Image (tube, rainbow, N blue to C red):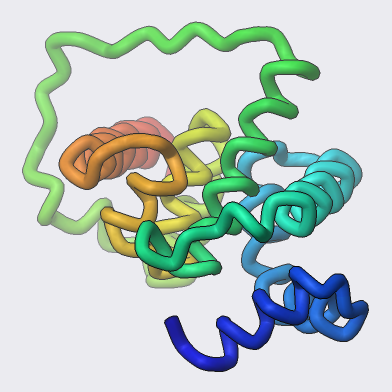
Length: 181
């Protein structure tokens, strides 16, 4: 573990206010982005965000640097708190897998639209994904977490996370292909 991280953890264990401010200043933006992607609403995300850091501060003594980095450990807490929030506040969703779809090669361009339009379509398609799927994309593409770190955060294994991401990319492809131009 890096010396600054060790010092931060020691300061947190001693309940120093400056350490709490450093923790939130450093990890807060990424946590909020992840939580917002999962829960979807600003107000809900703010509530979950606070719960995440309360839980982090309450459980900092249980952090083990041999299992993950501090950031990954915090992401795990954020993921779990977000999913728990959704389970408490929203009805369960039903996922119906589409069968017998003929997918073209995913390596081909979605279409010849300008790059900006393609990005807008991708962002629109992402909003149609389930919260857990959005969370995985956020962790992998926005937060640059490894499959191993995402697996730790989601209580999974790296190969499963890789499979989930592959399915999500295919699902995005199908969504984009069905969008009007």
